[in-house]
Image (cartoon, rainbow, N blue to C red; front, side):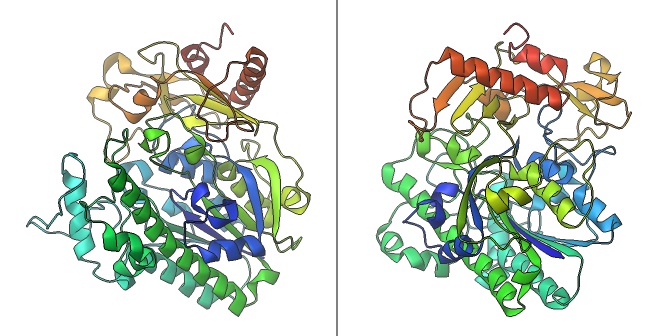
Length: 499
């Protein structure tokens, strides 16, 4: 048995033809839907990038206990478990967060791995002189990442040098080398179409009518904020995303071409997924994390081909969470038992016959709303106090996204040793007081509690008041939090102890 996981970052469901979009140029996603099972109720779990990937290693939500950080010593890692069971696991990626403090050891869990440099201000090309940066559409300060990003762009003058191109080329070479071997699991993971939406002219030319008439400033890297740009500029941003998405579609097509060439469909599982979506002006907002996780961010595309049942060209309505369900599905596919700490579900019967695997799903970012959905309603529970306290992080490897945790953050009464949780394998943890002043999740926490009826309001334009539905979803939220052994203060922070 073999498996290929193709993971995009920030792949918007509502921009894909299988989900009803007509403005994108993505024929290979349409082709994918014909060859796989397409899921209509797929949701995120922990947000954003590295928390989602920790879910994908451990098959359990982690946003209740910790923010962005490394794989913990007590964490189960599915790529590592597969490797130890004799399945060769390989990661090819251009996701540069793997190589910062907060992602330091994820790639080490694979049997082998390779990386392509250059995405989003990755500190790659060493250049002292300032690069040429075109006039930008908003007044955002040009900082280190902007400077480095344009240095990196200059080092990739053609599409052949683009980091996504190199990532998929490495993945295709792995397939060429190993297509006639057994027991391997390949993960091809690209940072695209994550912002900045950098693509070469050959992809923009697919939307030549727009680019020929647009005379505005450079705008392919939106701020994490409300929309303040003129309409033509905001529309231009969407075309920059569509251009990069067209490139992603072509890369996906090359993977399917390899499966056709080597007849891998007969014995190779194919999973195509993402970590989350992105707001490109919907709700008058850009990006993710700082605002409530509206459907554009939380409701994700998901496709799977399982050679054991051979289902293709069909849709599924079961409520799933790929971040925690994929790892369990892969373990069972290769005949390996999941651990008792895992909370995801095997999707085999779901793919075969749309068998339900859960009644509700929780998702969120550490320190922000805790959200729950049953597929019909989405309930976003906000903190009850303005200071978003009490809130603590639990870890044995304190680190931040791209830098070390400072000694001040670990000094005095800010840190203590606490008792184990039920998934930490008897390890005592550091309990660190969380300080979220000015953070993205602290901005999200200032939005009110909201309830949406997706059936009657799929764009989430009008929150509803329904005490019975709210109470039912609160009960499901609490049940799922308890199942994850959530810290006691999470209930207190959300005002759930007295509900």
